[in-house]
View (spheres, rainbow, N blue to C red):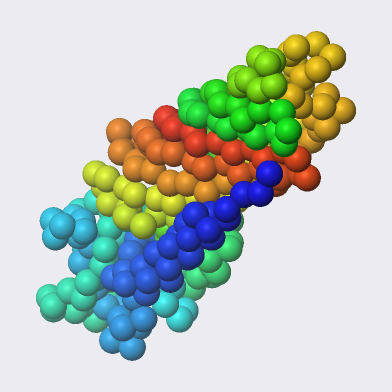
Length: 299
């Protein structure tokens, strides 16, 4: 049975358009805070007007002033700044500070230029810029499976997984998920009632992009591949099931989704959905749409 891939292609095109349209729309943004050091990625329009020794005002996206920092080292649009006043946090946006510039900061307020110069402004892929978090995920959704000349079946897809989320820089990261998915569908055809139950051991590798990343709310998209390895299966009626048991094997599938995230102290609650597309065979097509709820935290 053929499958119309237009909705899938449209989803990929829309996701790519969102990423490209938002990539250059940021103001300067704090990507990491380590003690008094504040790592900032500047917007392209800010690079030419920002120099070592300048002060930057850090604010929330809605304009609430949070901290004042001084640029201590700069390479391209990547900046290491030193916290002077207030409290810096990942996700704050930067703007030039119009106050009077000091010719030399005191040793008690800022680290010496020699110490700062020893710290390389790392590239976006450097592990020094990473924010590593762990978590858990629960999911529940619908599944469909069509077997040619047998039946069109529907049912559920439930799962529980562990999470590892690694922020490469700014709003881009990688998310790994591993656990168990339970696939169950039923249907009728040719006078028979069919049922397929498969328990999968799963590993998902996804790219994650935060479209919105404020201190109170986030919006993200994710996409990648899943590797599904069957642990057990049960097919009925015995001897005449809709699915050939020999065809049940490890498979890779496409995952596209997104959701919203809500910071809760040092943790992050997220809610969303994923579309799962199994590569079709000559006579079997399978897909799933799964709602997800998860919790991330830093160790």
